[in-house]
Image (cartoon, rainbow, N blue to C red):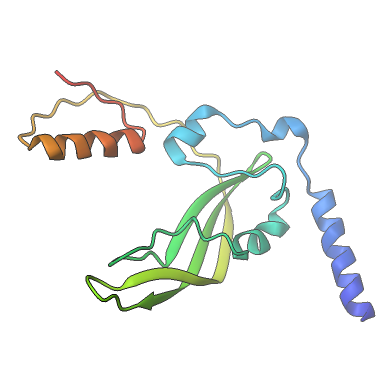
Length: 156
């Protein structure tokens, strides 16, 4: 019992000593727009919390549904001034449907790995002209996709 208490105290001390200052939490808009950087100033304040944080029951990082699933996700995470590539591996569950493809979901997180990386640099954007022949329905879908990905476009 004493060993577990000492281990917990040491973990808490590591977390407290590694907490960033308030000004370290500033995030430049390009990091969110271009890299979809993730940060949680309230619950993820130290690199020593990464594995536990992403192993919890929130599986929104994975894209699963009828006929498709994602069992590995890589996130760019900012904690203070530091950046981490976090890879989350999931155990996938599935069920046969009466009609259509199998339905897939995340059963649990199997493993979380992370490495510290350099701060990403701002990507320069250039305008490119394309001429595409598509249906009205596909045009709407393409515009929604471009908006969702944060890609600027103009109709001419």
